[in-house]
Amino acid sequence: MESLVLFLPFLLIMGGFMYFASRRQRRAMQATIDLQESLRPGDRVHTTSGMEATIVAISDDTVELEIAPGVVTTWMKLAVRDKILPDDEIDTDETDADEIDEGEQDGAGDLGESEGLADPGRH
Image 1: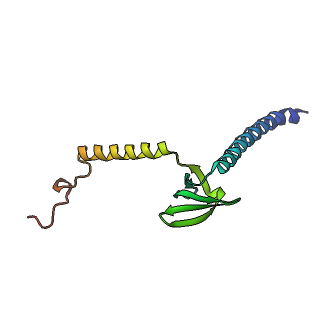
Image 2: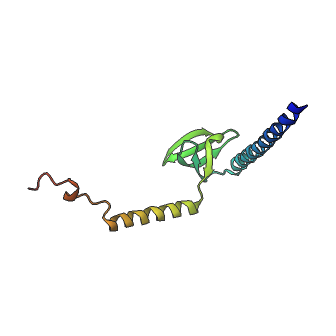
């Protein structure tokens, strides 16, 4: 009887963990299904391998992705990780430009004689 009392809290904790883990997995699966159902030709997407592409055509299990002008490849729908929203591209470009401007102002890109990189043609 004592062993059952000691084992019961362990079972309750494990049961709770499994319940919450399955809920999280179910939500992630539903999000993937919703994404796949919302894909349309012309959408910009990221694949699971990090490729950015534009959807050209969609069938039941596959999508045709244009990865460069005139270059179309066939991918499984499951390889599409997420959509690229137009706002994401604008924000990313502005952030990169700001970082480059700050680097130039700080002299971060300048390599000079002070760092031991003297011009070999100069004496």
